[in-house]
Image (cartoon, rainbow, N blue to C red; front, side, top):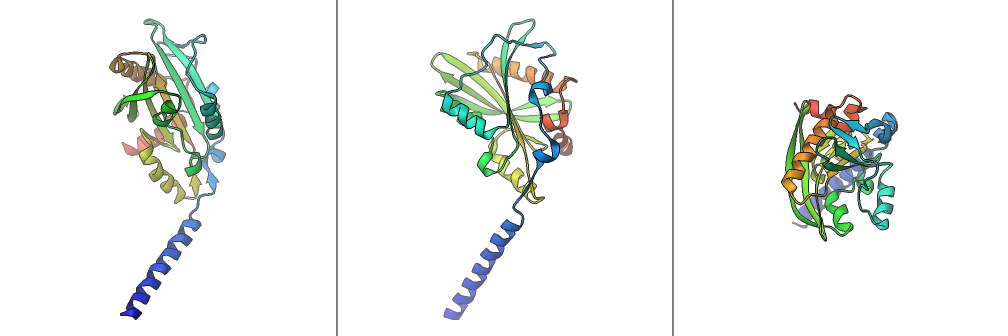
Length: 234
């Protein structure tokens, strides 16, 4: 009985050592960002598209110094703009954050965490879907509030070439890239507006996103919007 127990212990120990050895062997070392080069978001995203035009006089967001320092560590590029609809005057705030290293230590900073860190309450959250000519994007929607400011938020992320709505799938994508020895890069697209009617705001966000994704001035399109991954899923 004792001999059997010892044999089982040795088998388990051997399995653990093999697993640890395998994990070290597939530890990724190639950065996808180094192979693809910088995105240059300032040039990649046009200042006008469809019915939307840049509002250079409108403040984009509220970020306290502590959160600003964290964002600077996490992201190699951060674009923040406010756009206004030419006809209706509706304003949408756009933030695109790009990080070249989507390993565990440098993951995207999701609005679910970022907004409470700035003092906002999350009053509601739900998943959504955006229809585009390239396929359907899975979105995450939040209703946030700080004092009298109600700010509905829509966001999605692109990890490598794959678009996704929320952080749950990030680990799976990391593992897929790790199996190829690659550390992926990542983008977070966040749309928000000051609007007490969350449903109306989400409709505006969808129209804004559809116009941006469809605009021919935007590029590199596949990399920005994860279109390669979208096409692979269809």
